[in-house]
Image 1 (cartoon, helix red, strand yellow):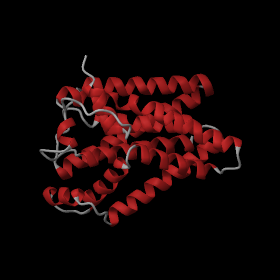
Image 2 (cartoon, helix red, strand yellow):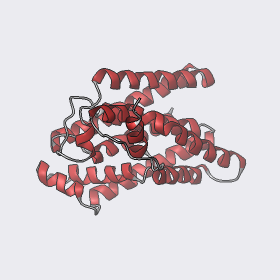
Image 3 (cartoon, one colour):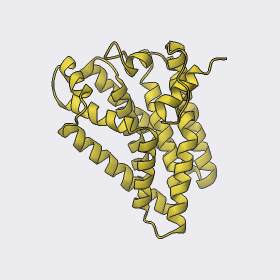
Image 4 (spheres, rainbow, N blue to C red):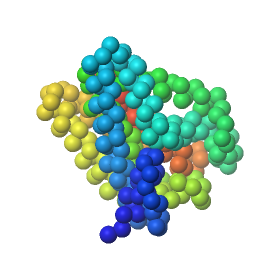
Length: 257
């Protein structure tokens, strides 16, 4: 049994050292995007538990714990998704035709749209997660947010979403995941999280969790739809943007409920 899909998932979603896959085709891309939530589950849990213990057992404010968690995850993912968020904001905010907008996203510098979007998203994530850590719910919230982010990326790789470029990560994964597989995976994770939270905290918390995950997927899809409309399809950057918006949505809804 080939492990190329798993290797591609680990190499794409984390910086964990692993041999490169022998082949990267549609089958490996499909497996990688479906395995994405599983690959980040244990790292998210480890980071979440560590900062929750730190906040619970020391005078460390929740906001500091949240900043540490976000920094750890940015390091673990090489900050690729944050970079994608900034590049996508610059491309979509430029108002330029698709070819020029894609060229803006390809540049290594960050423009004003990217800076503002990145700062606002990180502030929302930090303050929301910080408050949840103060309540003792930060570890679970971080896991749900990180997994939901990868689910948003998986759904963005269904056949209705073409690649904006003929090369790059977007071209590899675009359309690689059947719609039924993406949505059944997303629904399975939603039910798993809602059930676990419901058993621990009651039905109201379960409903809030389900609503947070559902809303995160909807907003992640909105980012990908905007990319399809303005850029002609998805890129690796737009997948990162969809993931960051989805994660932020989960944290904001959970802290509000």
